[in-house]
Length: 279
Image 1 (tube, rainbow, N blue to C red):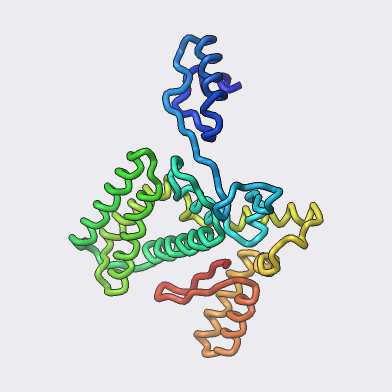
Image 2: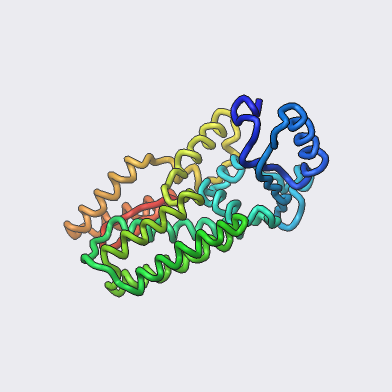
């Protein structure tokens, strides 16, 4: 089956550290005897996953599927970032604190990306920001070239985000800086894939499964409330709130904000306008 889709020689073969011997040794022997060609050019053996410093086990009550985590209210993108941020040769100790940190990191990235794409910047470049962005990109790729060290790869990107946010606040970031930083973020997201918000779709699929399976009792209550409104309905309420503020109807504006907050929808006001996100 593998040869049907990948050919007789693979560029990359992955698997858990427990498969190195004898499973992968046997794969090499069987395949290369059959084809007389190198079976795989590169092998990646991933360390075991721990949960709160213990081996994941159903009997210990610390066994979670992706769907379990989604139904607890965690975002698919946060789960991805938490898992991918630990280099594959290192043992990942999965914790809910780590998942919360990943959630906050993605919020920072997306908020920053929105500031860049929605803001108005004067023409030109700032030498210090140009140098910082180029250095961040170079350091990012050096880390990935160093045996896919994803932990080191994300560090310069977040350093750049902090520097650029400060520059925006001080009115020092120009259009040329924005374009270069967006290009660096694109390189980052080609691997980490968290900037575009596709979390709602994954969560709604998990909710649909829970409803069909009669498992809604296992769903976090705030998650049910947060997805009671569609994106279009939230957009309409945010527009109504903006209009209410323009008309100095602050009571209605506050009412909309509070109603959305009760459903886990956070509104962020900025110079570029109001944005919203699900908790």
